[in-house]
Image (cartoon, rainbow, N blue to C red; front, top):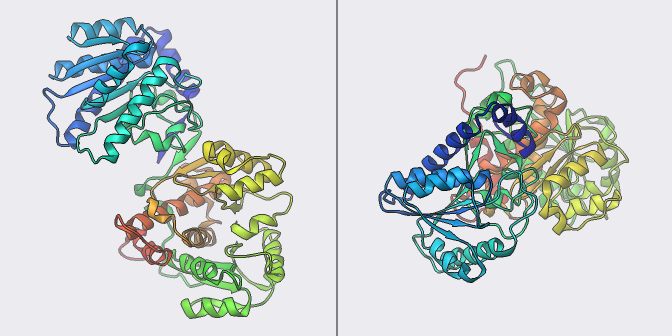
Length: 518
């Protein structure tokens, strides 16, 4: 599991070492890790080390010092190094080391921005070491103009199909990315890899910052034991075997979980079908569908395993409910079932149409699954008016706010899925592919999540064993579902288009194999 922290948490962990005069040691550890990451990046691209060119964009603070010390180490490996001092001044010791290593130095000014931008764009590596985690706001003035021109040059080269684009390596965090929230301020140069120190920063694992961070490499610098509880966590594929349900020898369909589904309408029958397919693919013991006869017929034809009916929520014996997928305003009886499920006290996934009929307060066992537009509408209804663009600019903050206002767990769908619990716990997952932006993908996710809630929602010990507080397990289950969904989508795509149906078919392949049942 990846743990991520705020910039303040990292700085507080560093403080005792700094007070004991170990600041230079921390910087040397960071710069050594940064230099090694640059070497690995060049090798991964099949480029030679000796003679390659590196341009470090160095601010005047410690972030610039890390970059300058790293560039000095790279010069010692035979790389041609150039430093652009974006503030006219730089970390004294770092700059002295860079000079001793024979690096070329340019002070950024208004009249040399085009020249320095072109030089950086033609480098083998650009190290972004301008702003660190303590910065507030983004790049302005000459530094902002330099970044804008460099960003445009790299983008144009990409569009023209250039094969030797510079590897952009961000030092601790891309300049202009908020370390705590992932918000972007001013021009941000998209990194190929971000080398972060001591612990991952929350803003690197939340959009839109995650979209500018590239691959994340965390370099230990000796503060790790002093770090507090993380503000954000992310499951990795290696975590799944301990968390995904597996049947035992004595299992039967009821002990493996029963999921109730209230979904679909005459206009959108496919949503119910795909939600049921997602749930079945994720191993639930039984699915009970409640809905209109014409939708039930479609579900039965696609999934003969599903038990269909038109009864009441109160009469269905289930461990969890999935409600709302594919519902429209014409289904008065279906909306009544949605309300009944939400008031049942059971774990509930409230998707799509269900988000319009939420009661005043929900529990953490209710998981809302909006996309950005739906969350904007929900927050506006709750008195926190916003627009889709506002959600997309700060999804981490928006999901947290929605969890606080509703009392529910919120899974905000997007390139990086954000899961926020009312306890304050946050998870993000990003295993998917852009090809998953296709009709029905969210219905499959709802089905997978519903299946997991029905199977392991009552198993608090499973999560306690991996350090998840029992009260936070609802967010953890939602994160696991997002991980499974993303991994399945990437596998189903294979780098090309996919359909939601094929995504559902691929879900079982994500499950870790286990030999023998006890």
